[in-house]
Structure formats: structure tokens, C-alpha cells
Image (cartoon, rainbow, N blue to C red):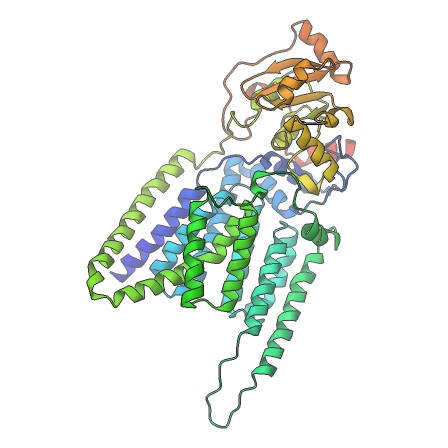
Length: 538
């Protein structure tokens, strides 16, 4: 009976994990991660942004080297399924560690299972096929190891600097990991030393605290020093600490609005935990500090909500277990407890059904929404060999790099501050918004082709501009070519009726470049030889 109960509880969080991990929608940067990862697998480490004509000489500080190489390797081996497997392994391992940490903190398997399931749902906004998945795993390991060492510099905690060497070369989220570890170790060292009760032995708490602080300081120094072991040296951690946040209104970098129903589970978890921490005083100081720090960064930037979910899960488990212990003392609540147990069984069974359905329906492909990405416009450009210097919205830059004819460059893409100066980011934002000086991106840089979102201002502003001619449109995108530019030969072909418009249906499976264009693009964009040669040629 006990084994069956424990198995059922494992089913609850595992089925929830499968349900949130199985569906995979293409992230705007996924195409770029594969292109850039292919370059790295080809033995080339780019130092400037040769993929862009607006910032070709600007330094490119890539903080996702190992992540992109891993993604390109998985795609090369098994295509889109390889990326799904990589996501499932990273996400599943993260949640397994979260469960282990929550179980150890609460001493209640059922509470850990519920808390991990809630964490999985809360993390949903961060479970895309992105390098951030590596940060979630490394952060879960960091907090687990620190919890096992009682937030002191001892035992396995001394191995964390070695992990940070890998982390700094995988994703820039390592800075958050070092910051949280610093707070946790400092709080752990400052906790009062338990009183000594043996006769004739006098406590020496001040000296013990001093030694703990010294050990914590040494470990923090090693954690920070590990960040220097990367191809860029000191420049990379300094960049991550001071410049990585883009100063343009990107949704995932926006704050969490408190007055609307968005991110309900995150808000409910925060509202439930804060009173429990303050009034019941059930949490240890290091856990409280880490939770509050992750809550602050999550409120400031939506993309950090998964970090909060990882830090909060052990405390949610402890809160649930504590509440259950209090309820057991109430004889009048026996029926409520039985109802709660039955509900847990029902939820677990439903999650199994939903997870199975999700795997069958969505588990083997990455969905590319043709209403979000300009795949039809890119098919038109690829099949007609129209390329060059292309201006387009942020979110379309990297799918364009994958799809456009060889030699094409873009005005902007999702690498933001890692590859572009703030001046170009501002120009690209004004271009998308159509406000004052909206055409600076086109006039200050030799732009030849524009792909505009149909609902954005450039789509109609360029129609009235004598320097530009409309050549194509579909429900998502509009394409213009500059008159008198290198790409102007396209206009002659347009007037001669020689441009081909493929009306065949587009598949939604990643990478979703038109099937008809495959025969016109003989080289695999992720082939290391292809991308390395293209980089050297550029």
C-alpha cells in the first residue's frame, strides 16, 4: 500500500512534467541558435556580427556557446526530434532535482510531488527550446547542493565552482546563480550558532561565525573566479552584469503586471508563501533570502519566473506539509483530509491522460505558427533568390538568417545587446513603431529589402514612399524592394512576370522553410562546413 501510494505521487509530478514539456513551439531565436551552433561545431568562434549590415564590425559577445553547440549537434543527429529530446532531458532533470530538494525540505513525499507539479506549471513560460534550459538545470543543482550543505561552505558545495566553469560557457544565467549562492552562503554563515549544552563547554559563536564567513567568502570568490574561464575572459562576466539587459520594450524583459490575471500561479505562490514565512517563521534565513531575491527579479522581468519557481518549490512543499500536520490535530476535519487524498488521486489520473494526449499530439514535432512567422514571405524570397541587406522586426531576424539566400544580412535579430549597439536597437524599435525618425534604419544603413509585419506601420508608410516598391504580401508580411539598389533587378523581373509565387500549403513542422525552396537551397544551413565557409567568406 505504501509503495503504491508513493508511486502514485511520483506519477503526479512526472505526468505534469511530461504535459508541460511535450508541446514545443518554435522560439524566435531557435533558427539562429542552430546556425550559430553550427559555426561553433565547425571550429569557428565569431568575434564580430557579420550576420548584420547595421553592426557588422560590432563585437559579438556570445554567452551561449555550449548551449548552441549542443542544440546544433542534437538537430544534426535527429532533426527536430533531437531538440525535443534535449528539452525533455534538461527540463525533466531540472524538475527531478526540484522534487528531491522539496522532498528533503518537507519530509513529505506527497507535498514534494504537489510542489514540483506546481513548479512545472509555473515554469511553463520558460520551458521553450532555448539555452535558458541549461540555466534552470544548473540553478536547481546549485540550490540543491547548498541545501544539503545547510547553506554553509562545506562538502559538495566546494564542487560548485567546477560546474560554474561549464555554466559560464553555456548561458549567461550563471550570474544569477552566483548572486543567489552568495546571498545564501552569507545568510547561512550569519545564522546564530546553536547553543552548546554540554557541561563545562562554553559556546564560541563569534569565532564560529567568523570562520563560517571566511569559508563562505572563499567559496564565493571561487564561484566568481570560475566565470573568468571563458573565451572572452573578464569581459564576459562584466558584460552580463552591466549590459546584457536590452533597453527596448521586449515582452519577456517587462515587469509582471500586478493588476491583471497574467501568471496566476506565480502570484498565488508568492501571496501564499510570504505570510507563511513572516508569521509562522518556518523558513530558514538562507531560503527566505533566496526566495525574496528570485521574487524581486521575477517581478521585474517575466523571463525570471522559472527561477522563482525553482527556489520556491521546497518552501511550498514545507508549507503544505506544515499545514497538513496542523489539520491532523483537528478531529472534525477527517472528512476534509480524505477528500483531499481522493482529489490528489484524481488529479494524478487526469494528468496521466493529459500527458499521454500531449505526447501523442505534440511530442514529436516543433510547431512553427505561420500566423506568427513570415514563412510564406521567406519562401517567396528564397525561391526567387531575393536577398541582400534586409530590414525586418526583431523576432524575424534569425528565421530570416536561416531562410534567405546565401550572403544575405539582416538589420536586427534576437541577439540584442550581445551583438548590437544600443543605437541600432533604438533605430530598429523606431522603425517597427513608425514614429518620428522611423526610417533612420533605412536611410543610415544601405537597406535593400524590407520585410514588414502587415499590421506594423512600415507596411503602409513604405507604400507612400517613392524610393520603395511593393513586391509581395500575404496575411502576415509585406515585402518591399528599394528602387535603384542592388536588389532592383528584382523589380525588372517583377514587371516581366518572372517572379514565382508558390501557393502550396506550408507545413508547420520546424524549420518550416518552404518545401518548394528545398531544391533551391542545396546546402544544409546547419552544416558546420557550410556555415564555417560562409563565415570565412564574409
